[in-house]
Picture 1 (cartoon, one colour):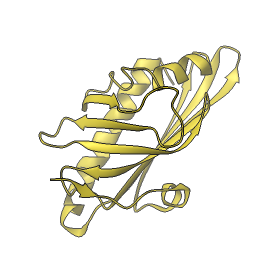
Picture 2 (tube, rainbow, N blue to C red):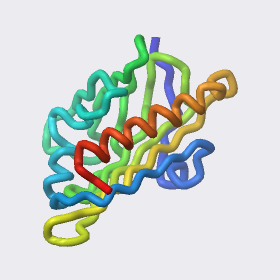
Picture 3 (cartoon, rainbow, N blue to C red):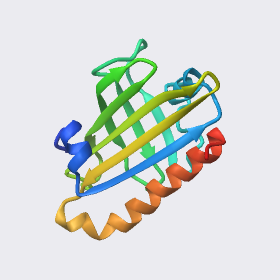
Picture 4 (cartoon, one colour):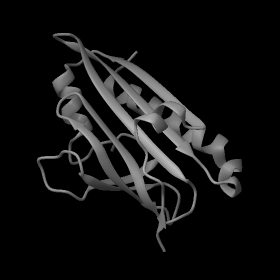
Length: 158
């Protein structure tokens, strides 16, 4: 069974009831970090994710889709990108999920060059759970913290 979620957008990314922002100062070029964030094995360094599969052909852009399977058995998330600024920024919302854990969920990735050999990656995770799933908010926060920690380690970020 698939549960439809409300599409997320810029307003939701700023005002969601649950919002987490990770800022990573990375000693790698912006191009290299962007390449990792759009590779076939993107986020493979995150222990909380079993798989991330692009379901759209390259070149990616607005409307690109992917499927994410977190570590929770039976959970699969269908994502749709509503923004794609090649080399700099991408944002998606979850369109559907196999479990009714969220009303709305969106993420934003921004990569900014800070020098010829370094960049800043800002990752925003925003969600709203239905009342029955809200007791899981602290668990979702821990999962997000884990994603951020694994990403910091992967990129050698401060």
